[in-house]
Length: 351
Ligand code: PLP
Ligand code: COI
Image (cartoon, rainbow, N blue to C red; front, side, top):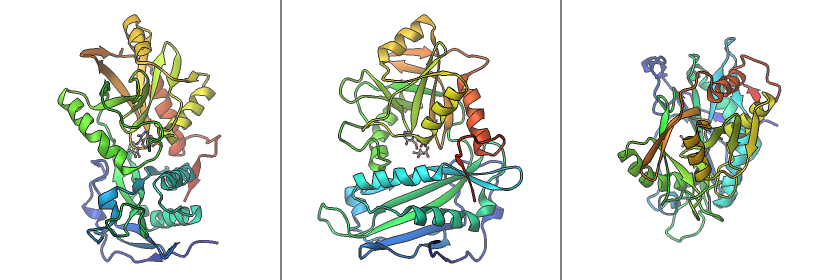
């Protein structure tokens, strides 16, 4: 049975004021948003309404205790004007995994999918058609219930906002391997897309930016010897012709792009190793010339090649290769996402 969704249409669309040939990332918002309240122990009727400010009590627990989680996904258009999503149920399942950890109520899959599809139907004109652009979708849930008691709220909001967006990074990124700070710890919330994980990254990332880097490569909190993630991306390291990525854990987000890239690479007969990788292995490979590529993967960034990295006051440049795994795999995944090739995995979902 389809969820009942109330729709309040905008009086006049803002779409004519948007330059679709020059889209920033995540700052131009589509006409509508979805809002659904959880109160009295249940989800209320979801409402699609004009994108607008929301009103919260100053004691809402989101402000004080950070009970807040989100997802990142994208909608694409193919050449026949079909709208497609990529593995959307995986985002819903991950949102619920994050919700469980943050004691936020589970969102029913039907409500998530029906609400998302309806919102995309209403704002279909906002899904960009130009190469490299897409409609970035941000589902999120947070504690709207109030009170200063440090305990879970009794009211929540589930919302979805969308933003036609261009590239997340302008070009290759230069990263710093972190030796002091950590983004996550065993038993913590690193595996969840909790807002606080990102807030905690801002300070060390700001220090890295001041030193001339764009992003941090996070290492394990205990020894700082193992490579874990790159900012808001999972990380892949190519040594000779083998692609290595860390296993996911309590501390590492189970990235949907990551698991898709592992599958695609294996099916292209690229040797993929999912195993722990030490900083010293990467440094040794960089020194011997066997380190060929490093790249980050994520919904926002897709595949972001790394130009070089810093570690213990030394910079290491990566070689400029003519043919890279990063470019080949980026084309393979975006061709599936935009319906240019067959989808042997059943990852695409049409609106
Ligand atoms: N790691 C972190 C910390 C992230 O924020 C993201 C972004 O979503 C990813 C990895 C990549 O995950 P996905 O490929 O599902 O977008
Ligand atoms: C995404 O890749 O969708 C993310 O959630 C990263 C985000 C922090 C911009």
